[in-house]
Image (cartoon, rainbow, N blue to C red; front, side, top):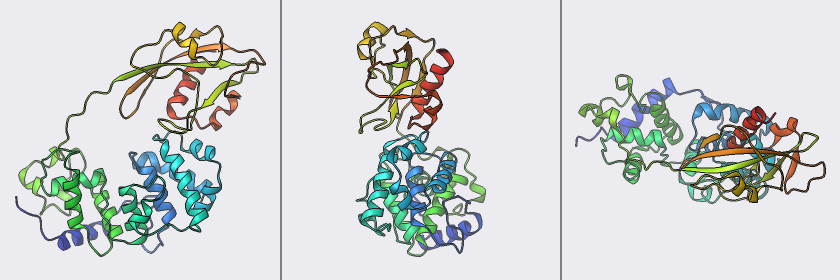
Length: 354
């Protein structure tokens, strides 16, 4: 295998390209601006397994509502999870709030600057710790996300499939990470992967690493990184119960604090399982005994590891019905910390039950 040019030459060429072509992002400090560690941390947590386009409006709303980590720490956790609704992976929102409280209350609003200390904070793993250390504090750290893995796989023509090749790709990325401007370098590699060395149809002709790129020389860039074949996602099933009081309020409940959608609000329902539920069977899991009526259609949603299909049944409750949960007026549903799945259930029920 022909090796790329020296790490120093590679990092210098990439940084020169970044100085000309860096993306303008709402959390990124522009030339001459002081980097705000709060904004770096907030954006990196939001960007975990989520796209820049999806994150940008959420980020702007968060910093407008909570401009400092102290403000975020002082907010009720339900307000934070409610503002997060739609971004997915809701444990991130709970960890975000827990981390804000810890940094605000125990560290006087200052983040630690080294990776080891950062990893001890809630919701901060290896990648996020490296990104904060490099971008916010100028520490030399190896920042590897999906974009960086793709760039390294092509630059060094690594044909071993992911996820098995992750450690190798990180070692290659470490060899290229410079002592000078490590934060800019980390963002430069991610920008390169996002805008030039893209998953499909990479623009090799304008790439600052065109010459040393071994995959380009071999004509295999578009096929890298190789990925192991994924097992098909199974489909699970459940029934949600849309219970309405005479005053129009709807019953909601809070999910357990841990696990999928932990701590979020939901329309009560059955557990999710492989087999379909009959309404008679599911009635034992309803919030109260009532004349439950199935609504036409189903709510479909896809999680990382499985598809979910929910049927929705509706019933009317008496004015003093005793059911565990909270009664929420229809006009206030938008203020609840409902995840995307439950917002789909609400829309379905509103369209079919009235």
